[in-house]
Image (cartoon, rainbow, N blue to C red; front, side, top):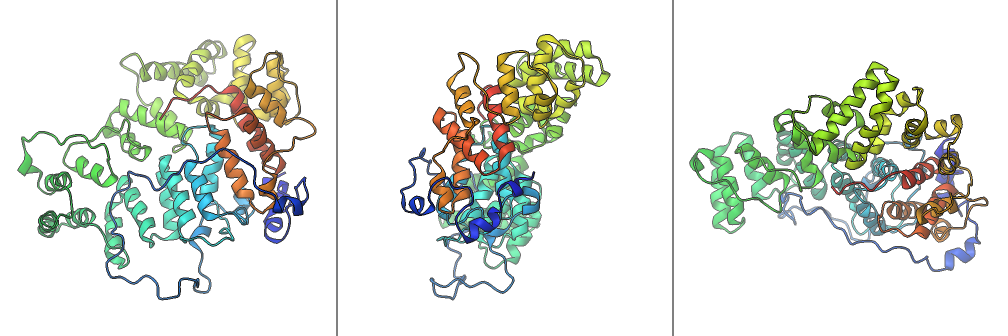
Length: 523
């Protein structure tokens, strides 16, 4: 049954009346205080955004209506309702946000970790791209929630998805345009962004952005004049002026020492440094910059590092990552080279259909993937082929473990006989059944077992469900499940919530990843 059907008509229930899954009296719950949940960090716009749009925008009038009145042309679509994935694909009810406070939702979206459980990461990315009705509470900023969705995608390096979402909405809002301009710089579409900036009177560019666009259009004299005027008027720092001067006339600085590293790199700075041949290293920079290293011009080592970072964040597909990993033969050893070698040896055995060699090389390959935090990517690529091989003993156990980390988790649990109490427990979770945790199980395992108990446990999110704040409850639960400092009780509550509202696949995959994954390396 689809998520949409399992949500028992929430598209209607959230809009009209009390939710259909409440376990307590709606009257009591609506007047009760919300539960105490883990606090959220205060997160605003990314600090790496280029300063490309002036705020406020000169003397351009942006509204002529009274502040208390909202005006929208007939047939116009709210920015908050723009998405790439319709409900027929996501299975989510259009009224998911309900009566939640838009500012709270924006904070929850921006707080979702870059690292964390892959299942949760994938789901929250779907939320960011989904077509959903705006919250019924009016926001102080009409673009608040949309910007938070974009910022979450950008924090994870999901440039293509962010660019597609912005272009679906139209980058006419200055803060939306600011993000689109940066994404366009990093995806090789700077000229298109400059043309859009020139054509939109509501977008007043800052001097560095204006100079970049003038230079790209071939008007070097106007660009140089803008630099001289801007620096004389104190509208840019000495460091900004030197970078722009080198960008406009690199021959003038021939023989000069390279510019010092910039701890506050922006896409605008990055592109100018690239243009003058001073390509910044992306190690340690936000993920948006890692895409530059996917190019063949960056060298294979840089490509490997970037593909691992972006794969852990879900910004590229497993196929893209594997193509880079198998494109050349390692000529050195240690670190990423050992990981590549282990995977390539296993990949060769799989391609040859050799079960003996594949089984012999599986443990080393998977250990290399664990070291890089890429277990689920490995499982996505190889689980189906592994499960067709006649592997037994410890190798068969590892193959089934990998299968449980893949979309085939339920097939594995239904078609194999468990060889240990631990594996029997994992199979039960994969089937969505109650089971006792193995003897001596850790707190996380016990918390997962409690979430799948029969009858289902009461969770602390009922207040949100009974007050038409389903989306907020879900985002709080996903935040908890991806938080490395999560409390076992929080795990039980979050998984129980997901199961109670019909997100069974997400709950099972999250539970299995909690049980089977090692801690991923930091970005």
